[in-house]
Image (cartoon, rainbow, N blue to C red; front, side):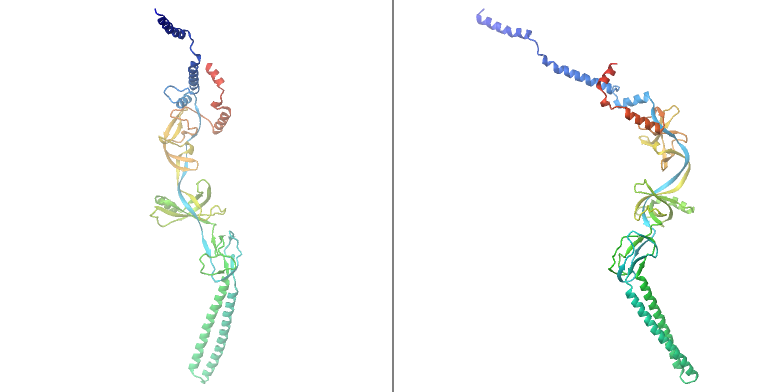
Length: 436
């Protein structure tokens, strides 16, 4: 064999021998080992913390485990038989019983305004005073003219008596006597006119003091002392609103008219309740006064007016209120707490507690509501035990444990204090539990 061939053969064999005897690098195996460990830990955590059945949502599985393993604590109350009022609700506006814009009846300078804005005034109280001197002068002139005419009348009467004496003596003609009698009557008419002028001057002097025509609360002053005011001023001096009693005008649908008229025809007082804008706070209680004589065709509603004593001032002019009016009282109705009424896919329903302490879904037809009580037209009978608290986890056939509200609140409070969040549990404890 040629030397070059032996050398080539030896060269080709040496790499093979080196690869067979050389060890593989160990660092290539560590990523795979770490990945397997991580996947194992994740699988163990999921298996421990979320023990759901295959193909089922974990949350649903836990719910079924709770239902199957233990009874759910709930608060229940029996449906009872009783009476309930049927109410009509409307939107209303508070309107003063009387509102007056106080204006001057004479022209002049305003010299004094004794009232304070926002004060409560009585009928006849002094509100403003206008300079009275021009009216006093007019009164003196009228009285002076009347005194002059009275003197003329007295003189004419004396002449008339003299003429009548001369006529009896046939010294003058009858015509002179008739003329004198006519003059006396003229002076008498003049005196009457003068008396009217005097009375008018006195009246104008009286008008220089502006008084309150009604009792109520005065608003903001429209003019200040020192200004010249006129009887034709549109704003006037001030506005007085009568607040005790006060009225509320509200509307109801036209379909409610027959029921309202039936109550009015019975001759009994119809109570009215006024609530705030949110319909939660009761402001006042009054009575229905009247109903309008026609229906508004644009809205299909009718106006009604109610009166409230308003001694505490809870109602204020132009305030928006919610009005509630009873029109009927249902007797022997099936009543349940409002909390028992549930709404969902079956419609309106309640959870009824059976004798074996399981619950059934009972569709019901809801009637009128009064406060915290609801009438049930159909669906359950009086005496049926219905769940009023703890319905969020209930399903058809769920087992329940009847507790009181106090016990349920105490259990919830102790559970929230004693239970630790899952994320805060030590992993070591969980691992030991699994190994056991």
